[in-house]
Length: 447
Image 1 (cartoon, rainbow, N blue to C red):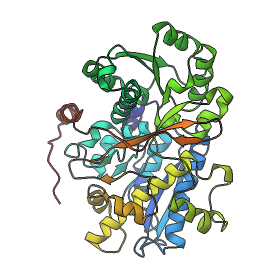
Image 2: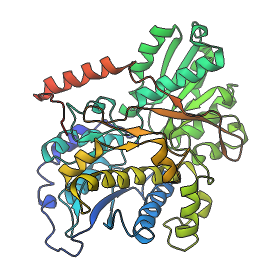
Image 3: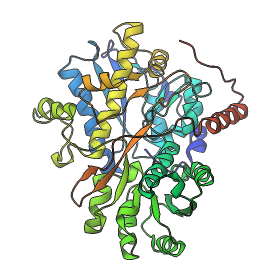
Image 4: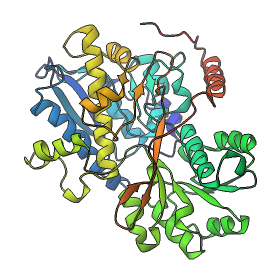
């Protein structure tokens, strides 16, 4: 998930020595034979409303695997929460605490739940050889597994999102040839997360001829009148809203005040939850968003969780109105990637807890095709996902466009696939530059 990025690398370096004592393996062995899942939480702090349904979906699926299916191929998952309050410093402390396992349970991978923390852990993960997995919020250059063997921006990235937004606008305009002269303003959270689409949109604007307008909003985004006046003055036709937290409903309400239509605002994946649209009230009706985590309760696996976990009183979700929302379903999707990686690893290494190195192998050999997705009861909930040693994001990147009807989200499109070749050379070049800067020799991973 997004973060300010601004202090990430400095904080990581500053805590390098401080975390050494926390990294010593626990002496107890009460959970030997189980697979550790360090659940990095932010139940406190300004972004807690986003985490709470996400964390519930995450835990509910893992509880279902443990309690109903008897574990992953018989291996139970040992969940250990570590509260970060969405602060990079605390996130690094959690990483140090669990990177070597805990209470006898082995660590196969860590999901940091923060784009900034993902960045902060880049060098640490490579040195410690711990897989870092950030579905939907990882670094785009980490797609290149030759340079980033321990980082996995699974499912989605912000460069692909920029491409999908432009594709949707082109569809509405009648084709890519109709984009010439169209003005697309990106209103972005002024952080590393928010700035990450500036470069790809620049590339796309040169390719298709639309006018690219970039407008930053300082954190936390509670004042946006000047930015929306700028959007109106520029004559923008569409707005790509890359917000987080309070910035999103403020943007929707401010847009209404200056007369900009909600159905020409397309929110980022972190600006497309119920808690982003609902606080804006009636003016949010028609608002659009990119969705990698489709909401709804009609998916078979979501129905199963309702019956086996929620109705059985085993859910982590206190507010049942949040069941099946964007963030709840996101938690389920992420948990699916963890469990399916374990299954892949078990086929090669045996039905036992995986080490971090074995987890790395499993994560770069994931294959969730339509058949497997249907078996999981997740048809329509998650798009196909296939990783390779060289491609740590997935060969098929897709998202839906959803629309707020005043009470709930509805899918406006099916999966829109990004062209994986469009930015491939640029990503490889950026990864190569990073490798040169860090003295890394890129080597294709082998099976």
